[in-house]
Amino acid sequence: TKNGEWVYKSEQGNTRRIVNYVDDNRWGIYQFFHPNGALASIGTYDEFGTENGEWTTFYPDSTMESTGTYKGGRKIGQWRYYHDNGTMSIKEDYSIQGDELLKVIRYDEYGIIHNIQNYTDGLLRRELLTGQDTVLGAKEIQYYPNGNKEMEGYKLGNHLVGQWHFWYSSGSKYAEGEFASDPRQYDGYVWQSFYPIEELPINHSLDGIRIGRWQYWKE
Image (cartoon, rainbow, N blue to C red; front, side, top):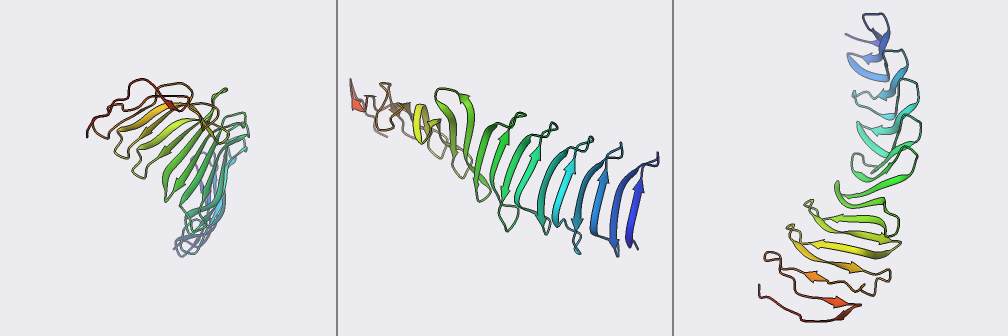
């Protein structure tokens, strides 16, 4: 029966793990080490042998790699991950109940945000891709609960701008067209909408006004 602090070493005699046990169960501080002897991770197990409290991991040069909190083996609150140069890599927000992912923000190696994802009931529902177009702004993608895209296009502030695409939940295209910088006006491009199956275009507009020949199809 294992009790107290146990130290595990490599064949070369380097410490690789320090584990605390109570009646063969992990309980207390746990430490894992890189082959070079630097601390790789540190955290705490509860009396049930599950991760509990703050856990932190490190790169071999001792730069922090990640940090966050567990509750009963589930991630809660905000978890942070870092590039090996020390800048922020990812922020993850979890529910206080644990393991329900709410939001993910990804950063490039210079610390600039390039991706934001929002989740509902564990499903990706909205994604914002920044830096895609310096004129149009950020690309936004929204998803149905089944994972299919609902809409995709660019946003400048709260305005829909540029070309946008819309889909039915089945995955077939619903509509596509172009927005001006003013969301109340169209930008002089053809707008088309589609039936769920036939996908036949049924409308055209210029600056929000119907123009030319309009055609309709029966389902």
